[in-house]
Image (cartoon, rainbow, N blue to C red):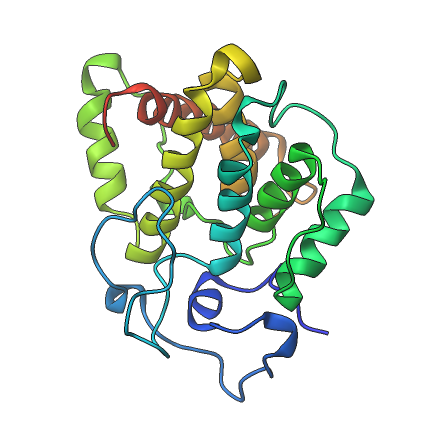
Length: 232
């Protein structure tokens, strides 16, 4: 049975119906990122464009459902959000609901929805942030704004849509930090763990592992800046 977990962004935004009931296409969609629609993604805007049935979505509908579930249930005030263990059985129920287009079960823990969100991004066959976009050295504070603008501009359009959508949501999470005890560093760490590097480290040399660690730290700094500045 097909699952939205592990599908590419391109396939996800072209699949308007529940994934489990959508046959695998004979040819996978080969729409290039350059053909993706331009424009900012509203924080909690539905990804379904009005009057454009059959066309692609701005972000995967499954991502929108997860964000909307947290936003609409006032879960952003949940203590230790994105920093607590989830119930594996509940996470499995969330995944089933996403795949089959069912309503989420009543009474789900916000932590289970957060885990489902993080694992959804981790399961992308290609990382949301392409490796060529990772900084190779630390970015000085004076140059951070310019680097962040360049970083966003160089993301493929669909990756940009999803990244800005998630970052906008994370900024809303931070706005409730007095309740949820989230910090910019915590959320930046969550982001790098689910948006960078689709491959494991087992085959890497010691030097390659260190370079990966360094780039992860540099990317954390960029995401912290994007989370804490007045506007993206």
